[in-house]
Image 1 (tube, rainbow, N blue to C red):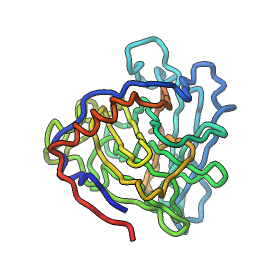
Image 2: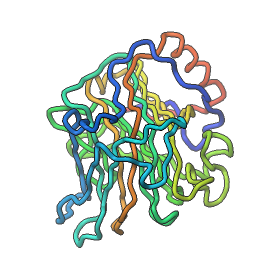
Image 3: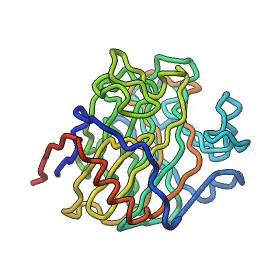
Image 4: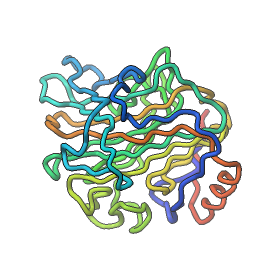
Length: 302
């Protein structure tokens, strides 16, 4: 594989949102029936003996845990994913992903959503939000760092910092490899690199820098057919060269993960305002301009 962007040398960001040319799919969860339109898949620690103990509520009123609408509106219904809810012997955390039933996308498209990794205790429990492309509907996989199999391309980010794996991607996973690639912690990214994230200081807290219980993040993963780019709040986090055609078509996924064995209790990840669309052609040219000044490095897939 070839990595076009080295995360630890990210020196600029794209503080804009790609315009939508055509909406291919959207979901706001407001009607309370999203559970009939979405499916759930999970993955645990490789070799773990306990059953999955996470859950997904597709009609969750997130105002009940003190979270306001990300745009300031009155709608506060979304999906709520909780993982590793209990401290089970023989289980070291898990990953849960949701995906719309029977959808498949190819060519130029993106998935975007509002995501809030919520920490009920206000610190001390690192969980991860996730978005990805090219999930296989016939054999779905929820990407997980310590799992046994891989599948879709996905970006994960920590909701409160404090871990060397704060940012990571899953690339070219298989039946024997998760495809996990750590991109480092928030302290390694220069201050101001990711809008809305605390970065560039010791113990940087990422999206929890201004609120220890977390904050809304706009997460986007976009494919133009030959390149897959991942963004947080408009900042380019990872760029993957797919010109070899490793990924061709598949579904989207949105999810949450916890790689640790301690119970997460009431913590979880809220997802709202999901869009799958096709960017305007000009957006890809703008993306190319945004890469000027970013340091590139390569890792070629054999």
